[in-house]
Image 1 (cartoon, one colour):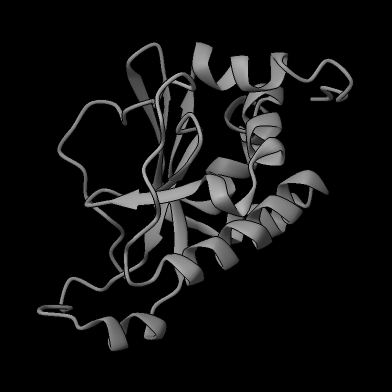
Image 2 (tube, rainbow, N blue to C red):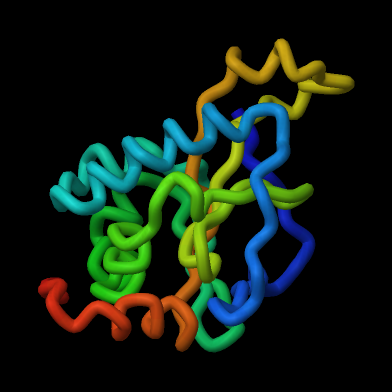
Length: 161
């Protein structure tokens, strides 16, 4: 299967001060359900489950530069550098109403992660009724001040690596 291909150098981070768009895409409910499972796995530090919910290659953006992880094994080796305390906290703090999407896929709040359906390259002219045939996968992780700021707002939450 082929994941979403992005021709950009970094995924946008949405400022917390901006109003986030509503999730009006036809498969938004399924995206929220996927996010909930991903959130639980991340919060429980279930590394094997988390890497199984990734669409490879995964791009991890830090300071405008992407690090690409092509396999589960590569991601497991660098897991704590991708799913840093700030990223994990942003995922934990998000609620289903924080999930929104556009032509790039779905994201949460400040854009800590991006995810979408994992579609084969042969998928053309899909109808909303076809979406359920394909699973979701995380394809991008953003590291940045906005992601970290999400968690700085909640001083009571432990930030363990």
